[in-house]
Image (cartoon, rainbow, N blue to C red; front, top):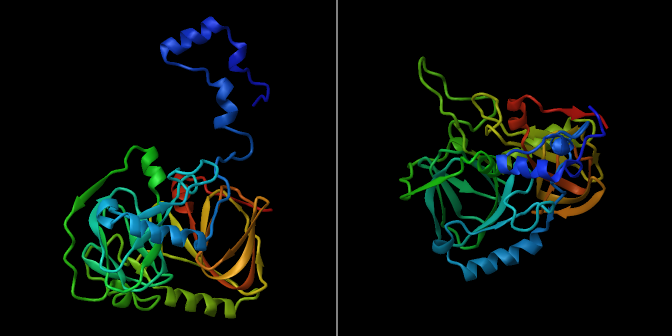
Length: 345
């Protein structure tokens, strides 16, 4: 494909005016913007949000705006490449930090985008999804898939804060994003599925002939079990690094159609240099401390911080103390579209 494509300015003004009047535009001056050579040229820039900066702003929001006026009291983590206020942390991932105070209830609703909550701080919070009450403890990953009714409540005595990750940008782009509101759900009088049906890896309820399985059989992934699994895996590894994907316990597929989640462990002093991936990513630090360099940008992170990387980013992680992170990514979406790739560095 030629590098010497014509520009719009080379065309006569009367021709440009005629095209505008007809509601058309020439492709060739814009070709390199939509089809760059070799690799995409992302708008997304590496982002970093230190939790000590966000927490006081969230607590102040709790003083200034009652949850009844906010519905969801959230601070949006905006991609630096798009500017403050952008409802994107990467091209396809929305991130927000949400606060619920003791005794508060966030009303029930259902929406087309899917959401995941990673619990950052506090005890006593819970989410109800399709009647299933899901405790929210630090590090837990809680699903509220698109099309599932959900509401939040707080039975504890301290603020509860969690990180929201949604595929909202995709649904906004498709003009398919909307929500419906409804009454609080009746809660089932039993623990959630992670404590009953899927208490042990490799075991699932016995299948009955002709019985349909739920699309999302497990909505809560307790952090205590995730951390234990990572440490056991690293113990028998060669480099003090372990990664585990969050999956549907019935099918082994990613937990959501468009977003994937990977738990990571790096022992103190260990480094990781993953391949260049076509997926964009967000990293949430559950525990620990370290440094990541993303396309030359040095990010010094600690527990409860969040940072992002655009597509095909050159990423280097190094833990200064034992570190646990969750990587949020759009690989499932790209695999469904048939173009996910990894490149050697």
